[in-house]
Image: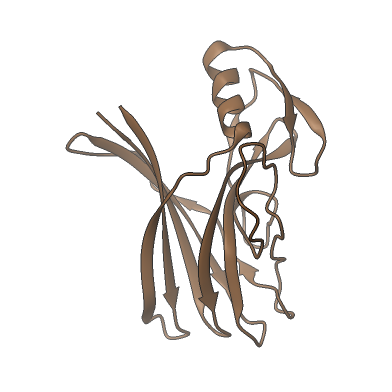
Length: 184
């Protein structure tokens, strides 16, 4: 069995025309992801997991892992940044998260979406989650890192951090789609 994570990056102009699209495999699930899965599988708390604020927390076995985020929310769901440091297994936040807004260096965060259900295709089973980011900052912003932030209990944890290199000019939209796939 294989577990794979892919990221599709699509840039569209203000008229909805696709400017560029590329997909890469993400190989950067971090410690909090493994801790969340373990605590659910064995119905036991996981200790010493760092939240996105840098505080060490315990994950309760009764907690639900939620990656839902409404428009403007930068604490959950797919998030973006400009950091370039190499990914480590103990990363707990993006190096330099891009703020929501229309000012210099900011992008507008859309609502997090999910497939209606998992999909089976041949020997693969997958689901996808996506989020749209709009650049109305007046300049070009190069997104260098993406991540998945999740609410678990009352705290936020980063489950993935992957480095990308995607320039988004003023007026363009970046759609990031994560695909979680298992194969037999």
